Image 1 (cartoon, rainbow, N blue to C red):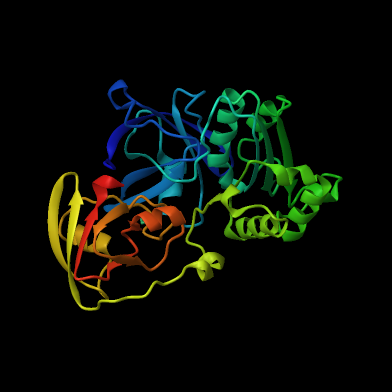
Image 2 (image 1 turned 45 degrees about the vertical axis):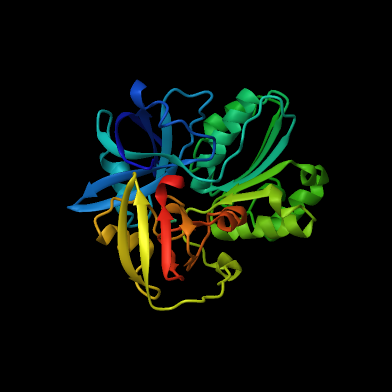
Length: 355
Ligand code: FES
């Protein structure tokens, strides 16, 4: 159940000029609730200047090697929460935290003999870091290749930790800098289509990888995904996580046909409570309507990216304006992002408890 719990900040450490790591101590009684898989994220809730603010941050700790849960937070220009965390957060502070969520997961299986390839840039390293540490610790026969783009060495989050981890011969780290001279054109510049093309041609074995994981700016994700597909990589093997609402990927979202317009009855089930709402097909989203009716439903980004607001439609139909986080299979099963969903049948039952 996606409820907030109060966690204590164990420590805050500075990673670079504009990024800190925040470590949480999970009390014994909440250990099970806060179990997570590599790649998942936490939603943090703050009250800043009298206003509630929620943000999702990927866990960079590994559930297999780290006792404390860790998120790394990079300052965003004018970012209310990221600047608050960087400027004010300290050990001992109590924060409202939602249990780990998210579909961008690398499932660890100690018997696997896999090769994983990751592309990341800037703060997109956070979920990848959790995956990498987990694979190296638990899948003793697997290999991991990471292409990691940054401006310079000093601005690179986890630069030292990655260098340390790369002492393990199963981990191949390729750092690419856009504002640093490396002496090799291949590792200078940005991770764009041309660069990915060249990198792959240099080592065609990369294409045989069992899974590709990308996290970073949308342009990078699109460039890598397109190039991999052009090289014939099955799209089932390509996984990515967006931190912001996309622009380039919007084209892919399809609108299904609508067979009902008008005011629908929507039953919302959350935490074993049921509330019935009247909601116009062209009105507010199901999430906003439920909040308006005082149901404390979960949400974070409200931008179709994080999937915190996921629920199952168990009766009737609802459509989403956008979806950048649910898989095709989940949509097929009836899952929706309620922050994007509107009813399109006379009666709809939306169950958050099934998410
Ligand atoms: S709140 Fe993030 S997808 Fe709906």
